[in-house]
Image (cartoon, rainbow, N blue to C red; front, side, top):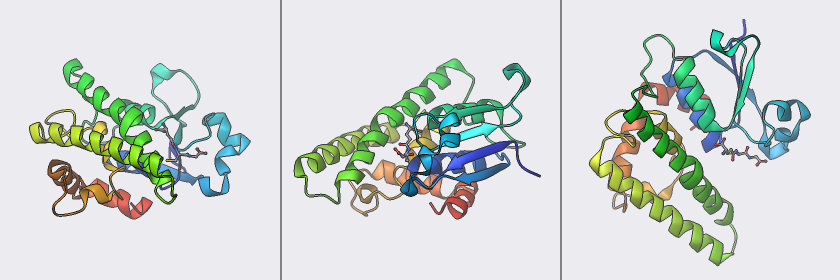
Length: 215
Ligand SMILES: N[C@@H](CCC(=O)N[C@@H](CS)C(=O)NCC(=O)O)C(=O)O
């Protein structure tokens, strides 16, 4: 029998967020791999659910009653994380997106910080790293360093990005740091980020996601 959630993914940082969130929330799901290296993101059927030709996207065949009849599709990773945490949380799963307005605003801040800042800057850094375009490499490396400095300060004051609780904001940034040399070294400039990263890596759901998505 197929699961309610079909997740259209590829194991990139944005795709891995969805694996981690689905595992954390204990939600059954079926993965439909979209090989972006082979341009499958331009397939007309995929564009119907993800018009910006990017993974991740999901289709929920069985959304809650307030959504009315029929399946719902969602693209953009933050929108997917918010939907899953608000509406699809499984038995015994943690609350990854608090309803308390003060806490929720903090989650939104750090979630959007990742979507608009850390992700795009690290994405450009990854893109230009193998080239010899020094201006671009320096610009995106510096900007990534600035953002990691901001994150390091925050994580010196709180255990998690939104405060004392682990939330979807942490998951969104975590998968971007999986392959970053900037936090791996013992003498990293970002020790609070490194400690936070190691704590999250120990979570059973993150380990399950790692096996499935090859994090
Ligand atoms: N803001 C989007 C970014 C998604 C994104 O950049 N996806 C990349 C993979 S990590 C992709 O599908 N690229 C294929 C393309 O641009 O054609 C999100 O958070 O979902």
